[in-house]
Length: 131
Image 1 (cartoon, rainbow, N blue to C red):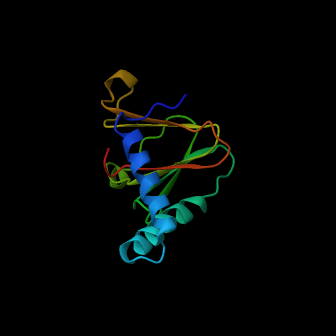
Image 2: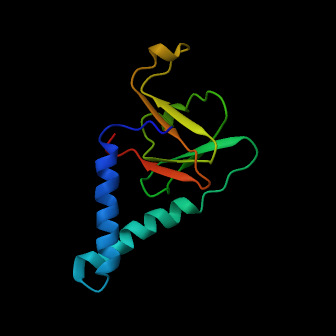
């Protein structure tokens, strides 16, 4: 099943509440702005397409924009300029993305780990800004 940071369910609940509130109050000031902001992020992430054995895409910006790096199945060491710079990831259905703080040949020596397992039928997006 899905293993996420323990603070994530609260963030999802808050985002869901804000999104529902924004859609319900689309005509009211900042709620309208929040609606547009939330839907733009998800629209950009939905545009991601995968080829062959690609399982995930890292992005420079939290709205699935900026530079992108498609990751194939297996271990990938990020290029130096992209290390510690990714803000969001989109994971293909049936794939699991694992991100680490450090590069090491032994998984146990790679430091803090982030894992996102997509068991759904559509792409799954996550923003790293609070991780």
